Length: 364
Image (cartoon, rainbow, N blue to C red; front, side, top):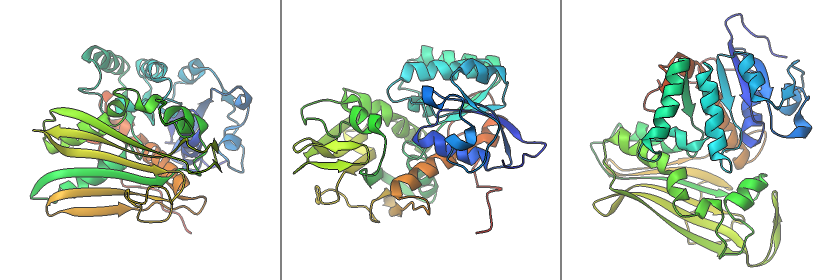
């Protein structure tokens, strides 16, 4: 178990899925934090040590429970919320409100809409969250990589050097064949499903909700008034059957996707989020190609000056998908001190100071 300093921030952790497991490892290996409780939703994980669930080679003495009440009872300074939000949005919001009202700051990867909910959620719901935060004197920061820093922190840094801006485009171009998350892959994104079937992500308006946070936050930071958010989607069938980490892809079912969410001004797409997601690199070669094998992120700004910047995450412990999830988890965990110090309420990248990675240096 890593040593905890006397001034360590007391942190609870909720959720040990793809992002949550890596965020938990980040907490347990950073002496700035002390783990108080671990909450999970999978029965088989209950009673297991946090170190084991984080994939680490030491025990912590903190075993997993399935009761959010136990998290609240421990009175941590902050909770890392990485429970599934894609398929249980209302429940995730309810969880977050409970934590805030109890005086517990929250950082996390879900629910995504709370990354920047203004003009996306009805005011009465936002007001209820803000009221809970004020009552508990607690703050909330939801982030990740995409939606997250690839769609806000990086484009803002580049835009801050421009004299004029005509369009901002943020892209994820990735092969998801190694992404081992069946719920996200099949139920949310619709891979392996018939082309005429509509999965969760492509229900009317869902793309605009999921990435509307990025569109609205970029617009707010750039001082742009968006008239409308529109979306387009293309699907490509599998030429033959093949297997991926999450399961089987039958011939003729969805094996590649391209979609755009567009923030429109006077009929022109001014802020665009584009995803090109393949399960094999040979599918749709006419779509945008990644800057490195497997996948990358790209920020394009048309203006003076114009930019094309490719972000290529890599990892010594996995492939590009693993590296991106590590980045999402790192952004969450490293933001904890600033979120704890922030005024109560929903906080965004526009509110928080620059997270610099202070204290993360280690000998190779």
